[in-house]
Amino acid sequence: MAGVYEIVRVLDKKRLRNSESQVHDYELGRGRGLAPGYYVVAWRSASKELKYDSSAAWHGPYGSRRSALVMLGILWTQPKTPKAESRMSGEATFTAVA
Image (cartoon, rainbow, N blue to C red):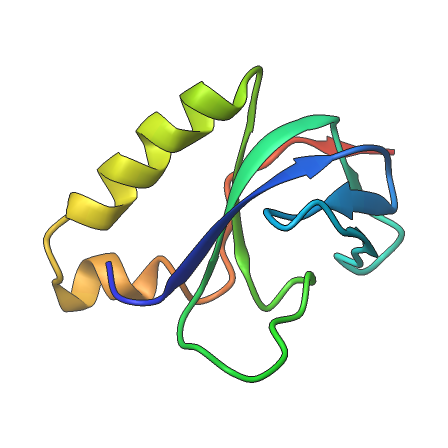
C-alpha cells in the first residue's frame, strides 16, 4: 500500500505518543477514542504536517510495539492495487472507546 506509516502508542481517549516520543492529541470525531495500545497509523500521502485524526487509517490495537511492527510489514508488502488503495480512504480497523 502506498502512503506514510507510523507506529504510535495510544495512551488514552485523547492522547498518543508518536514514534519520536512526543505526546500528541488525536481526534477521530464524535467523541470517539481508541483503546490503549500500539497502532499502525497510515496516511494516503505525505504532507508537512500529518494529522492524527479520521483522515488516517488506524490499525490496532496491538499489545506490543513488536506486534505493530509485524502488521506494518504486512501492510507495506500488500500488493499496490486500486482495491487495496481504497482501504486507505478513512475506513480504519480500530477499537473505539465510549
